[in-house]
Image (cartoon, rainbow, N blue to C red; front, top):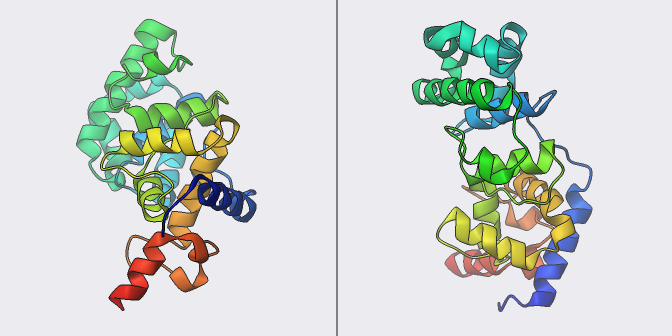
Length: 215
């Protein structure tokens, strides 16, 4: 199947209709909590992150209180998130930078966000989009997989897929489409055994054709 501009528009329309009411799965109250939650979410489920952050933020709701907790205390609080030592190191360094340079507040500028330890393009895009209402497309494993399978944006790296999605999706839909792709990846277009028969995009998905040929 050749994925034309018209087909991409149809894919986006269907995703938007199906997942229009879905919200971010991470639970947070402010930009700081969102930033820490996204750092913790690397190779960890949102459900587990929400359990961890509920406990962490009850004890340390801001950057200074996390610094006061100390690295050992922080590691104990986030141990169940996986990769906890590296995450604790980055979170502690980020909190220190927030206190030293930004009065404890999360900066809104995208390029400045990227200077924070442990913050890459995905994290910066999530924070920019959700916390500061700026158009952005964060490419996590779900977005990367679904975009490639649909042919909506092909690439071997998250950056290539991000750039492809920015071309394929109208700017005003970037932030919403990020969530549509995530939820579709979680519920239908799974990494293993995707539910192609139940997929609302099955008629305009090139990967379904590949699956049929293999079977």
